[in-house]
Amino acid sequence: TSLEKTALPLFFGWFLCHPFQENLRSLAVGFLKNLDSLEAFKKNITDFTGSTERDFNLEQHFHDKNMLHCTTKFCDYGKADGAKEYAEKQAVKESCGRVSALVLDALFVTPRTLGARVSLSEEQLQLWPRDAEEDAVPRGSRAHITLSFAEGVEPVQTGLDLLELVRLQLQGQEGKVVRESGLGPLSYYGKGLWVLELREPFLAPACFSSFYG
Ligand code: 2AM
Image (cartoon, rainbow, N blue to C red; front, side, top):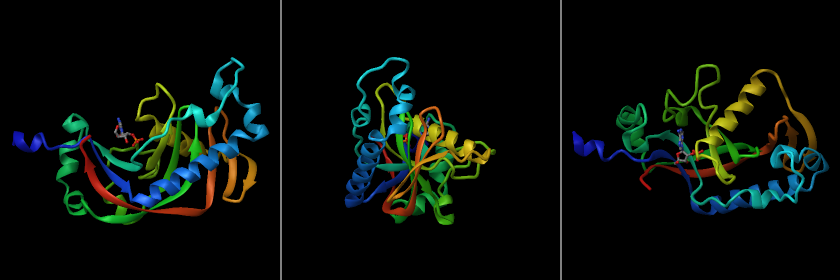
């Protein structure tokens, strides 16, 4: 019915429970500070600044973002393909309001976005849409939390940046380990893509819900 159509949200996803939002933000700020101070990062600064040489500060490059979450289905109030079908799935209906633990196993940064990679459990994959990524990558590869993005960047970009990393890794590229930090190895993959693989994953309880905005 038309009434149901109007009920489709902007998106569905897992929303980080409160103290964990702050903890993750702190982790991300530490990551940026660390990266900013690295010689290897400075050497490749034109990835971020273009050809121009100028004062550059990673933390100022990225805006703070509130309400940290992992999007499952972007519905665009029903305009996105498959939005209605997704909203009507039994698993989706039953899961609204449920809390599960998200496993964050890496932080990544590009000139466009700052994100955390999420490794979904079998149960969480039940809520992952079929059309989130193409067949060439394992299901759930795109799952992430956007921590921030640079000015002028579209919100959809973080997932695309993560998919780029996944593709590189599937091709056998490992990146160049630039530093062994306390949290894990920090690698450079070229073209401004930096990845911190977390030795100890960050566990974040998160509530599955729709978001209307
Ligand atoms: P995000 O998941 O990387 O944060 C509202 O814009 C939310 O939906 C944001 O969380 C955003 O990105 C996500 N989003 C926006 N456009 C999208 C798209 N075309 N495909 C998938 N997710 C999208």
